[in-house]
Image (tube, rainbow, N blue to C red; front, side, top):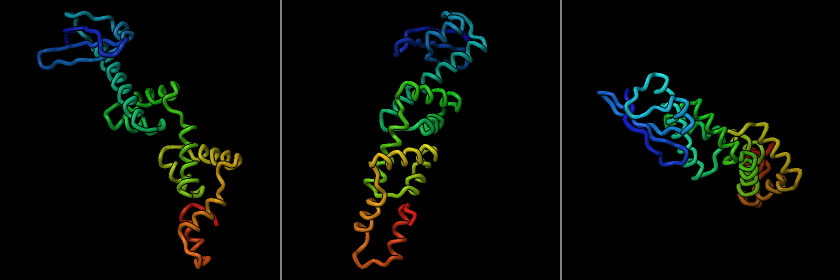
Length: 194
């Protein structure tokens, strides 16, 4: 393949490199650093396999960053969820993992803060018990031990009172004449171990 053009990219620190051969034309957005590592090809140069691999990799990393920022702009996501969403858009698992880890290290994802907010919401607003909270948040990609640690910490600080939440749940869902069996079923269904 032959390099057709090298232009400044839309993002600062990136270039757009166009390559073509008889059958196809392709355009890659690459970082200036990757461009230099690929040998700084000029229009008219031929792109060998190594240069092409570097251009493809750099373009995929660039697209992954754009997708990640777009995904994070819509809602909170944890690292695992971001990796899953990136791979569903065609980004390789290795690059998706690398980009998600970078988003965490840059502070775009704060899993501990997200987890605390979700636990508080489930316990205080939805009146769920610890068992249901752990199951629900595990499905969202949080580890069981992290969930338990947050629940314990919030209980110790008084931000969550499962006994009070259980009483509110019973008052909200059952009539005054409810049997003990109905109360036990309601509590069990909502994650309380009574």
